[in-house]
Length: 230
Image (cartoon, rainbow, N blue to C red; front, top):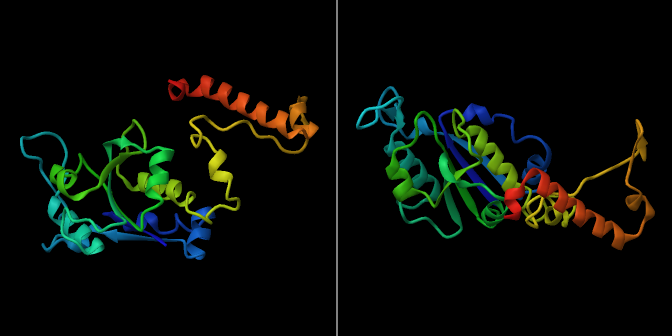
């Protein structure tokens, strides 16, 4: 079982979001455990403060290192810098490396993934320097916090767990799995408002269908994501 431990100042954000679709089925099948933990649990002042002004001045607040270190050390059972085998500690931030299908596949082999949801102007850099195994961004844009990104990460990783999908080959043919975007898909009716399903898909010749799908995947990648071909 893969265990996700999400460290956040808004644990209620995750109240029902994992109770649907593939994630729900994976949890029910014992493939996945997802828990959200309130970072304030690891504070020791009466106001449960998790942020402070940045040294050197500047806008906004920065998340303090102490509660984050304590949270991760308790959840992993090890001191900072001594991550157990099979455990990954992920900081979600705009400064991280891009989440890709390949990275999601790598993470799906873990036993435990601790996810730190950044907020405010960011997280004290000592967290990134010492505590985490990787810093991840889900895209080249800025969110108000790491909570939506955590949902994306859990979903992307969960569907790659063996047994999570209805078909064992589904994940092998999706967008990015082969370096290209997915090919177009059609279903009934064969004609809708004058638009027909390509004849090759109706003919039943598997070799021709496979060639058509490869050509279409390449064309769609050229059109929508030429950077993948580079």
